[in-house]
Length: 337
Picture 1: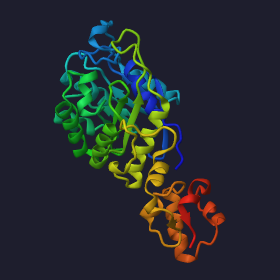
Picture 2: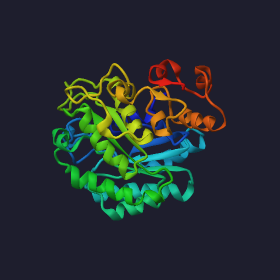
Picture 3: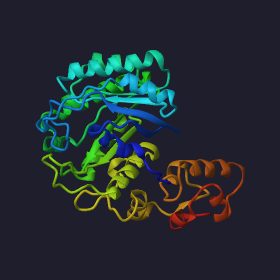
Picture 4: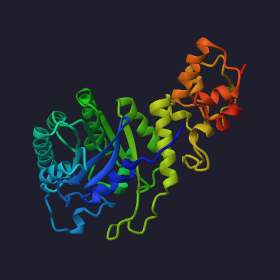
């Protein structure tokens, strides 16, 4: 597998704090430059990691996002919009503002619109958002038993997970489906807890699960907490990809004694080393599902191997290289005949 930089992983959390004008994101195989902003910068909730929390006593600013979006669109700087908001009065009012802005942009714009669903949103709000959005998302933030550590005003099952299930009910209306996000390291969660929850979301049909590494913000109760490592975020993305694209089950992932994914090697390699009874696999006989569990063999190269075998026998490592296999990673886990 090849792991490119995932811009949205880092941008989502930053945009909670800042009026981010343009963010580069991927939607399927497309790269888009998105106008990404909050409709308001103050919140009635008091989440410990957030500088927009009510205890910060910031001067409220309500953004008129449509004019700014169309200005950037005319200049060719953006090709879509991602609209979110704090809960600046109550959820109902904030959701109505998101819907109003999304509807206003959609009247003049046929391109990509992503709307954020807020905790506690009504099902009617979600239905209404789906009329104007190409993608919806709601952030789970942390595994259920750790959410109270950072956001004790939110009920995980009712305010977040139930709303995510409602979003999944309208996913067929959405060109790019729905997503969720975890803030990693703000609470004392481990990777096993995160991935168990992520697997449930993937089974609901989520297009992506995003992971934003916690970083401390001055003036918040967590200002002295350590910034989360980028290596941990990378391993979580790799594990999520194995579940979402490679058909792995969460229970197949290998964790250390603290429930963390090892940082020294990627989770697919560690799975192979811990399951020596499954390897090496025969390039001549292994089926597609067996092939994609081999380090160095991805989805495309596994399909090419299966297709090539139907025409002729694969007789050399050089042939596998031409088919896209990373021989350096794969060689100890395969044999030719």
